Amino acid sequence: MVLDERPPGSGRPTALDVGCGPGLVMELLSSCLDVQGIDADPEAVRASNARGHRASVARAEELPFKDRSFDIVYCSYLLLWVDDPAQVVGEMARVARDWVICLAEPDHLGRITFPPELGVLDEMLVGSLRRQGADPMIGRKLPGIFARCGLEAISGVHASMWSSERMREESEAEWRSLTGSAGGPELADIRMRWDEALSAGSLVQHNPVFYSIARKPQYGQERLEQV
Ligand SMILES: C[S@@+](CC[C@H](N)C(=O)[O-])C[C@H]1O[C@@H](n2cnc3c(N)ncnc32)[C@H](O)[C@@H]1O
Image (tube, rainbow, N blue to C red):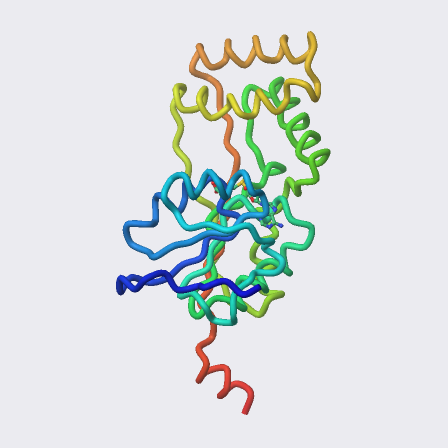
């Protein structure tokens, strides 16, 4: 089935959010883009639609849209979960008219954690992600993936700033994912030392997050290059 890709015209650029999850990024971008999303998880699609966004169930590997359907096709925190990221980026490029953008993919093997005795947390998190089927070093692979898809990308790493409060909030999801994988007294001891470092103001946890932005060669240009 090929879905209707063009929302009722507003004059704004059209965009597709691939692996949109519950629609948080669509929410941020919907004031300047006519954006819709797809996700493999029906629950995520329901959550997106409940927020008032247009989302449907589909796999990133087989987008149910015609070639060149959207001005912009983007994803975020998707590629770490897919088996063949180059296939997904290639599929994104197929349905994009102009821009192919990976907004954010983390690189957990590039984490900086201080004090050093808390580095064991990084190993636990990487192990837990691998067990769930994720690629913990997808971030650094982005430039190569775009190049393999014939896309000339600008790539980089997002800058980051942190405060104790923010670190506490953002780490809760990680702690939840670790509870159950390691659990027990070992984790409780690390958590105590983590809390101490946070209270002392010495805790640093930086997880690099990469991006890649590419503009597709335009039709005329593609034709010229083939001549
Ligand atoms: C970590 S969430 C990111 C959600 C959203 N992009 C964001 O940044 O908030 C990853 C999402 O990708 C979806 N996903 C994973 N593999 C997928 C695939 N092969 N095709 C489509 N969606 C997929 C998951 O269901 C999940 O909703």
